[in-house]
Image (cartoon, rainbow, N blue to C red):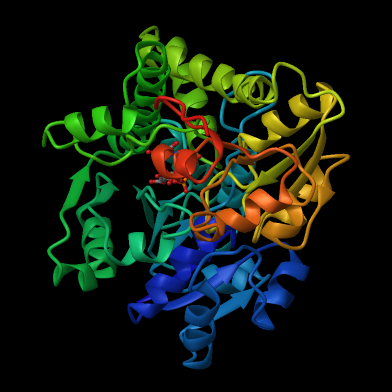
Length: 438
Ligand code: UDX
């Protein structure tokens, strides 16, 4: 089996590496020569735990190659995966498909024999069909079938998500394509991974529905957290109390500063637009988008309140700026709303993140970037935990207290137990739980 993976972003690189770990002969293709040169030197373009080691091993074994030459890589491949970016189009929130369609034209030019063309990028309903049309128009003689095979990889645990998925979704009308896809995923047979075969369009919609549902679940618990604060209840207990109901499930019920990242914000918005245009609006999702946007902006107010109503002349120590731990990804991170709002309110912001600072420096101005967690807290009036990296979960509280001007912690991820923090002499503000004062 030979596959060409077009696009060495998050999805392409992880999927390409994992397929080749399964024993498939994979070539990962990208236009960016610098990126390919760095990959050939073993330098990963993203931080993903375990990826560098995996890539090194399979490159050495000769099963994974990198190339800038799409034509050579596609020729003779059994399957060609399209894994290029589909960012939100400026202005209207629709997914920008120009990269997908450009790649489709190049693939058309490169096809030599029968191949399945697989969209792995998250693409709106109808995109696979359009890719097929583009290829057929350019190469009426080409032999191929279209497949939609969406990814469900979480950043930070993408390799595990690929190797041990809850399910694989494959959308195609062709039995021949089905067989090739079944063969590609055969290694998952051992762990009895369910494969959902469906139509191309249904598979495309399934991906959006999955991400949108998860974003809705998070937003629901975030609003319940706000209500808990008004009623003196504890959202962690509510989440446990409802999550243990098998119909609801415990995952994605962790209240926080609002969801971010490369998928949820973009995919919710794109589905809202698709539904509006189809004349079947998704009112729930429209509200989710609105509530989440507002939530990220409101978070700075909590910090200002903790400072007694004004941040003027105060120093805020921010721990964690990425949208979640174990990634260097800053896309739509709540920190991009919180930090500028604090600065606007007159605060000086010091910040530390284990992996995200290189990216963050490009997006945030006027922040004092620190080398360590404890250096960041030196002389600050308040600590704000925005991302729950492991190293922020077991802080030396005595040391923190000595470093701070005032012992105040605003924990937007509920990492700590309010009673323990109060007993240690902190004013501790978290999400959806009764505040504890020293
Ligand atoms: C997501 C999907 O989970 C994955 O299946 C998809 O294909 C890509 O998008 P990812 O964006 O990497 O993955 O991160 P995820 O772990 O899903 O978290 C997304 C956001 O939701 C983060 O900002 C996270 O902090 C937030 N979140 C998640 C919560 O606030 N509470 C939760 O309970 C779970």
